[in-house]
Image (tube, rainbow, N blue to C red):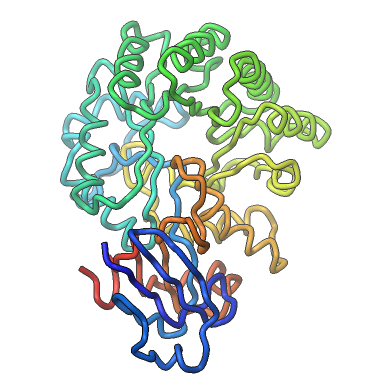
Length: 399
């Protein structure tokens, strides 16, 4: 891959700079002089004119369900019951009518997400007796079809439960053996009604196969907090620090502050991370407390226009703004944190050690016309240019 210079951009809203890329990675970020801004012809390799635009790392969708969407298909009215159990039943009853998982819809969805600046995904993919492992193959093919440079981490996800559906645990084991990066879990108490049994089975599988765990936890209050404790205990006992994620974790938002502090300290000590989808119907997570404790937090879209609900457009910058509003964030440093959660803080959720505008990081970037980060996250302007591995894939000069 040839050398590329992204000239005259403002990394993170700072001074005009040139970002040098070699073999898909950033090798240098240099403050631009008046001569370089004028595009002096003394740089080896291709030059991409950044036109003074704001540059940020591309978005990392740390909690997606790329296999479920009917994006690009005719409108489907929701007709299921409320609650997790009702939505599971509705999806199982009607996904066959839409041909879900569907390669065409998944390609269309991924293409739309890339258009708004997302280039890395952690996707939960349903694994059950109805679809087997077909969804994993569909998601992999779709992401590769849109652009082989996109980052994809796959979670084999038991959307209909683990223990209550005999055979699902075997499918999860097979998925891990065949290359799934993580295995998922789902509300061990309220879905399987056996939190100890589900977690013991999942941690045993993860240990044997050398994969991570990403467990959906919708249960609220003390029931959810109890499951936080069980997950932390098993993470420490199995030495899986840094490889376990709790998704949603609604309980952490609705227990009293003293209980929050205790749970956050436990998460930090065990090396357990969290992902949120900035839900407007749940109590906000204590993001300041999590940040101060060093607990990794990632942001994701959850499902987008699927049989769980018709909402979502995949715009991670807009979602970062929602996260900031739900958290009551107004100060500049907090608004910057919202952008960071949607970008560089997501590195570990997609298997990267770095995802930033710095040497050694993948050259995945977004350019947009904004005064600064605060303007960007509150206004969510259109993405002018999206770059994957140093290649312009959206915007002027896209290939």
